[in-house]
Image 1 (tube, rainbow, N blue to C red):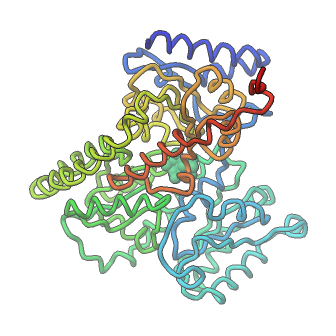
Image 2: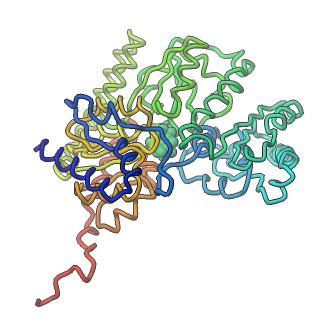
Image 3: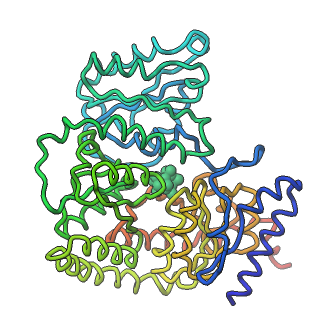
Length: 487
Ligand code: ICS
């Protein structure tokens, strides 16, 4: 069976490549492959990644600005993040990621608002520093409870060579509030991944160096920081509950529902817990080198991953934390067993193809497998070699691997492998739904979530069941494909 699947997967790649001009085919061939748990030098070891997308191809990737403003900085709720440049980037990166937060928007929190310098031709020709300076002052006047401002550069800023660092420095000295300029122009790098890195560097240089925020911090032996959880649909909250039930104290959530102060006190943590390796491995390594804080990757998707991760975290602390953790696991396993008993018969054996950003293509595999579902294809929009290497451990069978796949490739792969569910992003959603295939949006959880931790698994299972077993799929045949009545 597995051999047949592998054959089909290899054939799918061959057919996709045949259509390309020779040069493009040669390049794309390096990003596509098949791997399995036994695979020696399979696609996870060899796939080419983090390279420029072939020009002219419809990529699903984002840009460096998206990685910095949209992903890392944007969720810090008590700071104002101004999109510096034309209006579109701020508007299109506003709210859609569903990183939840508490607070009074417009008063002490600003997460869903759009702040922009709204560049026009004049600013491009004569420079935008004056406009930026004015915007920063206006922000402080209108929103005096902000705890700092970050300036997120859009493409034109780097092209016209404005000195935003100088503007930030001046504003900081006048307002005595953090004012941090990030040169995350969209054209930098090949995807949002470089934006993560630039955002991490700005945190390293501007936030980690602010010792005033942590001077009066009272430590406990069980302080941890959640790193790389953006609280999509409440994920970080669901995570926090479990860690607290174990007896740990969560001192920071980076950056979902985070405050500036939470960012600045993280060097006081005893252990940094890293969920999204792709977007925050840089700052975790920095805190290890600079402050000697160890970091540990974990995975809270599905009960199997969650339980294994809880045990790994507990082992680090030992003693009563281990005992507490076993009690937490026992308490929730009863509940998750019931969820599995309820849904497994309806979902078992169903085949899934994934295509997501830089972490979930491997992290969510276990959650599907807990429900008896099978992953037959997965790929990253912007993963690096270290992400693909980590993916291997999560594979259970022959799996088609596609890096920076485009719409044409995904469509062809789906047509060939005929999965029962496609789980990817909004750009893919309607393509596959119109093909009559069940689909789940795995970036924003399709208006649902959270999906992290035990409680959230019940939501995940229900969502997958609703997507796949909805009666709507029996009504999707086009009229011309239906047999005529009486014919
Ligand atoms: Fe990390 Mo969409 Fe995260 Fe990941 Fe990252 Fe993005 Fe989202 Fe996706 C993300 S930070 S926005 S887990 S919350 S850039 S879903 S890599 S692509 S898989």
